[in-house]
Image 1: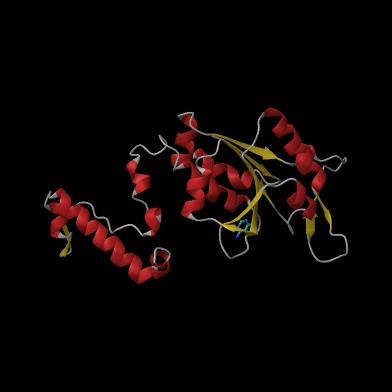
Image 2: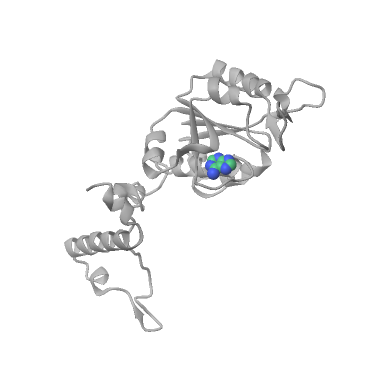
Length: 227
Ligand code: ADE
């Protein structure tokens, strides 16, 4: 997979890709992430990427021209499954959307800033908008990092134990069961006996029961989807 992230603040998004799973995915050659600074695509001598809103109002608006020039250059190199604008108005990111995106080959994530982008970018250049939740961030960079992380870890070969993504919360619309590690007893707080029993079938049943119970208690809305 190839992910191009367009931003006017590249430093805001660099570090998540230089550590842990996102870094490993790139080192293994499974994912190529390219963070693109929008500023060199500006056309005036001040390298402006934003301007005042027509009709007035507080806040600057990101201009269409630098974004279009940047996208035109990218599209000449490869074809994209989706050009995604990160926005609180977008489709809410869920595990199911992450699963869908993990099957794509080439993606662009466009990060908005200030008051957002000129509406014509959304009408004519972007194919999809994604929100990471019903709150407003200062820009799309952190949201783009969240999307990239949620998607990349699902690509086969990225996690060393592939089954570990399958047992995440939200796969199968259920939260994950509780997990424990050594010691088996701490301060008198014990790990459930069944997990130490070595009895595979009983352990699977325990995990399923506890995942279900936790989902019932904390996120009954997830279970309602199946009814
Ligand atoms: N940009 C600002 N807020 C955002 C959000 N909640 N999701 C995605 N992009 C954003």
